[in-house]
Image (cartoon, helix red, strand yellow):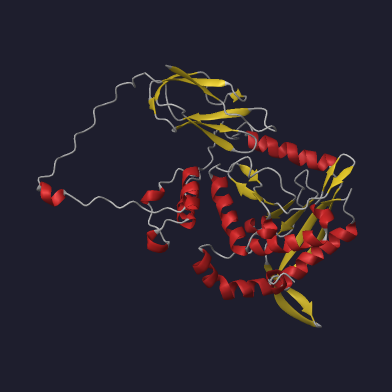
Length: 397
């Protein structure tokens, strides 16, 4: 029986996609659920699993082809027989007595629901992991560790094509890079972008983190970074100045009664902005755990369209790459974005004395159509105060 392999239904905002790499050749056996090909949209890379087991009978659309939802790209013959492969080498039989070879059946490994879901998303065999939970339970953190390790070792060096003494290489933009370019131009064209700056003394946050980072990691299974403090401070400021959390729709202003914070993440494939939903309800550990997960999955193109959609405010941390100062571009239809930069020791004046403090320059780019300079400056000052007195953030003061 011939089964058609079709492009899955794409989101409403995605009109077409690009076929990346076929993982099977014509005549090869395929198993139900096995990934046949990677499909790139302007947001994510999707895996297309086989809906039935059989043999890949025909590839209708080759690598690099642009396709739309529901388009037939291949055929599977569920009654077909795979091409004959070279006979496998027969393993040597041990002369050891059968009695000594026999082993007790392995006990099934307990896997938490969240770990099972994450493992399925990353093709990780959770049952093979050594669980760190109670009674050997495999936790989400155990799976996340494997995902991070895999992502860090999967980077591929760019290929340079020499063309004489003055080499050049023409490479088509990926769909994600095209989409990034479109949205940046859209932001510049459709919004009245202005940027205001402030500086923050990070010493209180650094001291707090150094004091509790070991206990935090031991309890929550994730490192205490600085990102969660910035997210918490941003949420506090957004609650105080709801116009910064709003967006423009024609001649209307939409005030959002929720706080979905986009976190800009740079990857080999381009910039992506996954969203922390209801960030006001997340703990520091929840935020750190989600950001680590986003970063690991961004490297391997495993973020979902839902995770990359929406958002009422964004944070971009160029400091991880050494940036000292920048003017971030708004992610439409949002109305503002916070830029974080590298924390460096600098001389500052305190009580008439020059002292050295770890300072960070903050930048807020905002849409001047609905956000006035007063709100923008006060918003950034609120973030500064929250970071210089982090106890207020933690105590919700």
